[in-house]
Length: 110
Image 1: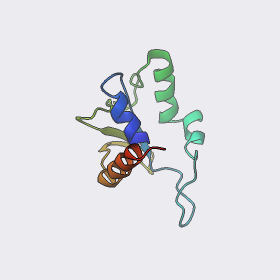
Image 2: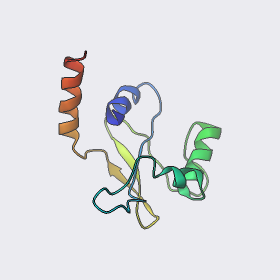
Image 3: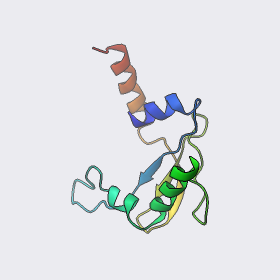
Image 4: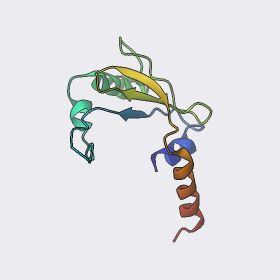
C-alpha cells in the first residue's frame, strides 16, 4: 500500500518516504508496528525533518542531510541507519512481488 500510494501521488504532489533500520531489537520479529514513533516525536533527525515539513511542507532545511523527493523515475528513500546516520536508498525491495500483488488486488477488487 505504501509504494502504491507513493506512485499514485508523486506526479501530482511532492512526496517523501523513509525507511527506518532503527529499533529492530526483537529477536526473530525485528521490529513492531509504530516502533519508530519514539524516534519521530523524540529528539533526533526525524523530529527535525517533521518540524521542517510541518512549517514549510518540505522536510529539508537546517543542518540535516538533504532528503530527496520520491518520484516514480527516482524512488529515493531516506534511510535512517542503525548507527544513527542516514543514507539514500532506492525503493526497490521486493518491488516486483508487491507490484504483482497490487495488480491482482486491483483486478479482483471486491
